Length: 82
Image 1 (tube, rainbow, N blue to C red):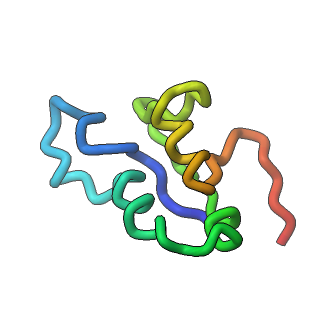
Image 2: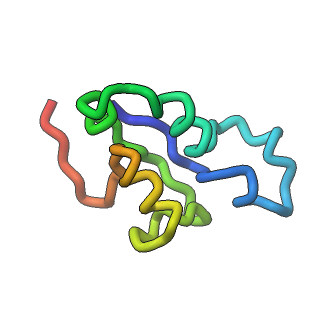
């Protein structure tokens, strides 16, 4: 399953009115899907990451939060069998 991961949180675009940007934040998705069984969460990959999203750099606290919650962050070059 693929989820929009454009922005991690509201703070990411401090200079813009984030309410005018129609993308769910990863923090919202983590909260919404956080209670799913780990087997389901392991099938979720965040895609469509904006260049400002701190999860692009796997060593950030934000990336570690996503990964330790059982979700995945798609990387360029990943291949998924359909």
